Amino acid sequence: MKNSRLIIFASLVLVGILITQLNQIPNLNKQLLQAKATLKQVKTNQKQSKTIISSPQAQQDNVSGSTKKLLRL
Image (cartoon, rainbow, N blue to C red):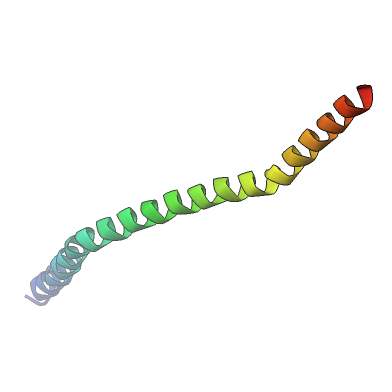
């Protein structure tokens, strides 16, 4: 009798935990979608930053190339 009460109590606790976990799924899905959107935004910002950072070097190359062309004339 004592063992069956213990098993019933443990089963109820496990069912409660399972229900709690199942209720968390929609919240976790929302968090996942938000994290994916944030990651996409960060990647876009990183790409823009790389373009801005590399731009001065590209401009310097253009100036150097133009200077060499002018010196040849």
